[in-house]
Picture 1 (spheres, rainbow, N blue to C red):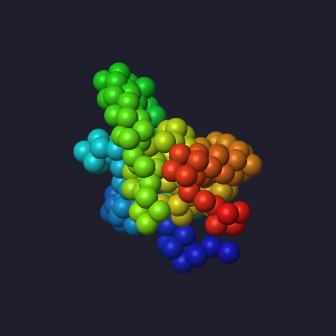
Picture 2: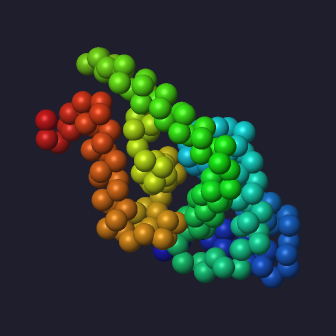
Length: 186
């Protein structure tokens, strides 16, 4: 059963595809741009770069809209376009890779000097810094964007079982690094 939001997305998509209606596309993007920008900001760690990538994503989505099959949510498909845009940008920019590497060394140094007090909740950014790029992307899609495992699998091209494993390993990595007790087991 599709929600009214998904039905509205499908109506707008059909309008865009049949008439190249730019206003309908603008409305479609307006409905999802906040999630796309949040996703890219968490991946890139740079607001300006993320906003540029979001614009690129929306341009790519316009060009590739006919490839959206209607299977799965539109936001899942759009986040796949955003993730691909992010990866392409990263490959194109050696400077970006160097900055990420430097940031990783700084984050590692900060984490080594950071100890969690029992009454203190660690900062989300520090937690995310211990994850690989793939783990970060999948955790953001799951927890920040609210996508199902199936939708994340569609967005990344990976099987649902792999997505579940990556989320499990990422949570374990965070628990271990920050010495967080699992409330179900501890």
